[in-house]
Image (cartoon, rainbow, N blue to C red; front, top):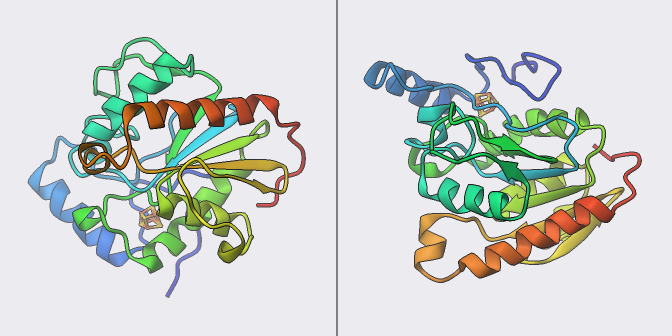
Length: 225
Ligand code: SF4
């Protein structure tokens, strides 16, 4: 049975019980690595940001270990270096949650807040965690643009917006209008995608610049979520 949302915000509780498989995985890793974060990873960055970056889910040894999205694994190296390059972050990224890095007019979240086995959440888990994604979008009063990292993040955002997925096909560099929000798609900045040349650093720089421009140029207004 689906449990009610623990809190009416974009922050699931540390022991969110809604996805039994992920709860069991979390428990296993709490026992195995008691010093790791091992809990739903909250969004990072100011709530009044105009740009929201949506990833897939915490990496086991990345965000699940450190407690901050994209922190501690390869995807974070490329993402944070790019945000620093484009003035969307300030400080120095040192792959740990207390490195003092600050996001500027930009926030990062994940479509699924708990680490999934083999980095693969099930469709049901993605749908279950969507309430938190929708709440995250809703609680951002100035949000203008969303950068989706990968197809799953794209589809989760479209569904959270109440739109039909078939109307908004995913494509790297593609831009969509959903109500007052602009959705920009990117391939995920994973090690696999960059090692195989699916996503080059230049492609990623270009799409982040595109999303930043969309966040700064949109008028804002009533959101559909
Ligand atoms: S993935 Fe989301 S809905 Fe599922 S247990 Fe974690 S926080 Fe709760």
